[in-house]
Structure formats: structure tokens, C-alpha cells
Image 1 (cartoon, rainbow, N blue to C red):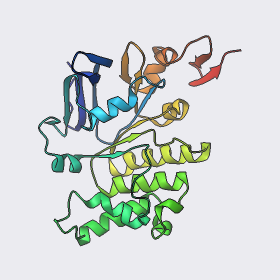
Image 2: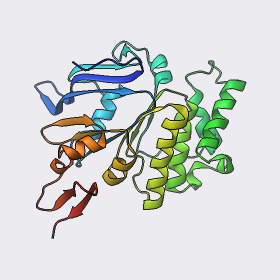
Image 3: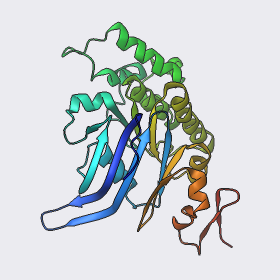
Image 4: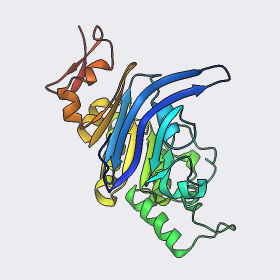
Length: 264
């Protein structure tokens, strides 16, 4: 059993994820256990189709777990009311928002929905949270532009700003660097790291940028076809867990540099 920490924000025990139909279960991964603490940046890595997005959807309640338990802020995910859950956890998905005709300010303001009255009126506190989110993500200067006018990198920062405006202790992001060039991939991950340090957010993100994740993450989750590992990056390197991600006849992991290389 895992040791309990008083600053635990998101915890899973013996979790199995996948899909249930009428006849049987399609289990993508099982035996998943971890505990995420306040102010930590956690990278989730694995090959395509391994179940990373399924795990994130299960953790945020969009998809039921096949077995095991999930708790957020010390409460079972199965008993938390949706309105309360929206104050505990915010989500940034890879899909483009359906509300791209909104201005950046309007889009970010949607993050305050869990706190507004039935008329959706913004209080001074709401406005302060929105302004702080825009400032932290450097999106103030584009606040009055339409979302459809933005580049992929700008839209990603705006999506993170909306999650920050929601002001939850836990943020989950599904591949936040997809479709970005190297500079913007690094910029987004550095922003996430800054948010954990300056605002004590607990941030879990899936990514294919394994080299960058190793450099910036406090802890990492590694999903393979047979196992799930959770530890500090340096310990995962020492135990050879990253080598299990891809076939060794094509890609090798260099334990000294912490980087992947293509095999000759």
C-alpha cells in the first residue's frame, strides 16, 4: 500500500482502464497505482495506442474505470458531484474547442462557470482570476482577438489560461504540445513547470516529447504493453524503464544522456 501524504491531490489504487461492452472488457492497462502531491509536474509517456488518453479520461471522470479506485482531494471520484469536481480539477484536451468564434477573453472567462450564478455574472473575484490567468500565460495582448485567428501555439496557451481561470488545484492536459514546433513545445512545458513552482498546481500531462518531459518533470508515468511505472525520472532511467517503451531494433534509450536515438 502506498504511503499517504497530507498534500495528496490525485490518487489511484490498483486501477484498471479500458472499455466495457455487454460481453466482456477490453483492458488496456491494469495495476495502476500512484499518488500525486501538491506542486508537482508529472509527465505521462508511452507509445501510440497504449492507453494514455484513456487513463486521463478515466482520471477526470469522462470514462469509468474498469476496477480500482480514484480519489481527488481525498474524496472518491465516484461520489464527487460534477459541480464540485469542476472546482477540483480542470482539463485541457487535444481537440480544438467548438467555441472558436469567441474572443480569447470570452473563452478564458468560461473557466469561471463553476463559480458563477445561474446568470453567469462575473464577480470582481472572477475577473481577478481571469486577469491572472491571462497574465501568467502571456495572452493579455491577444485577449480581444477571436480564437479562430490564433496560431496553434497561441491557442494552446489560451486553453491553459482557461484552466487557470478555473482555479483548480489539479490540471490534466492531454498532449498539450501536439502540432507545435520545438520552440513552442518547450515553451508550453516550461509554462507548466512554472505554474507548479509559482502556484503550487499539480499538473499531469501526456506527451510524446519524452526527452523534454524527462528534463522538466518532477515525476513520470511510463506505460508499456505489460506494465505501468511511476517514479522520479532519474530513478526510471536507472532502472531501465524507458528502454521498454519502443522496440530496441529501431530506437534506443541512452541512459547517460537521457535521450532516445535511432539505431543504425
